[in-house]
Image 1 (cartoon, rainbow over the protein chains, first blue to last red):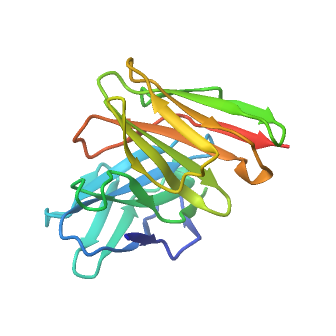
Image 2 (image 1 turned 180 degrees about the horizontal axis):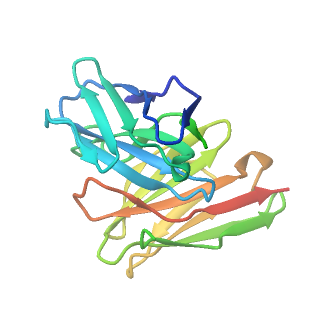
Length: 119
Length: 112
């Protein structure tokens, strides 16, 4: 079974600074998807960024980028120019590509990292 | 706004009772997923439906059941409720082979 580990329960960053959230995962599959979701105090789960395992290029969405290291099974999220609105829980998630891989397209989540942004 | 709707937003009920949570997926999405978020277990997958058929089961208790109707909305039924069932229940939807799942706002269930 696939597992996702976020080793930093809490992180803090100064407004306008850069912060990196860590995520490692375990899988025997060669093709899969990885995601970062943001959960602000409103509790809504918001998709931040997506990475396909077959792509070597790291995904980028505005101020959010990832460092995907497939061999190391590492998938970190970098937030640049942090803003107060970035304060939230961040969840790393894994998903199989094919139904044959465990028979489901379910997301497997890490425990989350709580990010605080200081003004 | 993800386009996924869930009702009710909050639900408070007593132990032993039964409740029904409702989810309407985004227009055109055939897959519906249910997840439970609790303090001790984190975010866990419960069950997936695709175009009315059950596709996959996760850590779903026997006291819980779900279904997806012809109009593609889904309901999660929780019965014989226990204190430990208190959690945030999310519904998510996706098109059949999409990589993204879009989450609804969740239903917060409190069992007293």
